[in-house]
Amino acid sequence: MGLFDKLFGSKDNKGAEVEIYAPLSGEIVNIEDVPDVVFSEKIVGDGIAIRPIGNKIVAPIDGVIGKIFETNHAFSMESREGVELFVHFGIDTVELKGEGFVRIAEEGQEVKKGDTIIEFDLALLEAKAKSVLTPVVISNMDEISSIEKSSGTVVLGETVILKLKK
Image 1: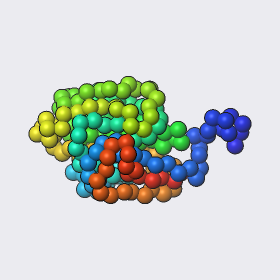
Image 2: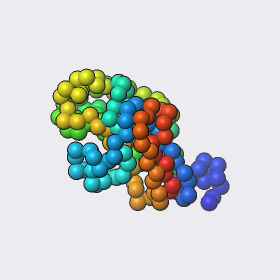
Image 3: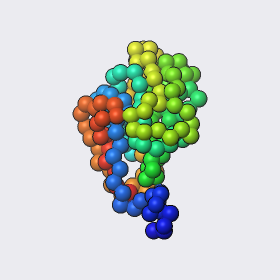
Image 4: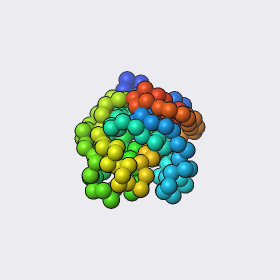
């Protein structure tokens, strides 16, 4: 570990433990129960899904927003420790072309856990989307040595949903 890594933190962070907090309030659902094979078969990564209540999605960790989809239904971000995660509101919500979503944060923005990223109209989305189950997945699982998943009811920005070890 070099001087700069000691001063500013290395992205390698082998052995680092990282807690991922709920990006929205609701009830945890097993990722395998999401009605989309991309998530249920962990093609894009492992994690959990949340059956949402409320009207906003917040940053689940301190880090930098990567991509926010044009339709504002999903975003990626990276933590200081190099954990890459993906939050995808609902299933087939891309087909709504942004209806029901308002972007609050911007791509490349540095955010703190609990900062609002996207606001949504849950009643509209429940009526129009195939599902509102919201997967929260770790997309660089090859760099994660263990993942511990929570269950039950969660509160956005307060409840730990995943504990990772790099």
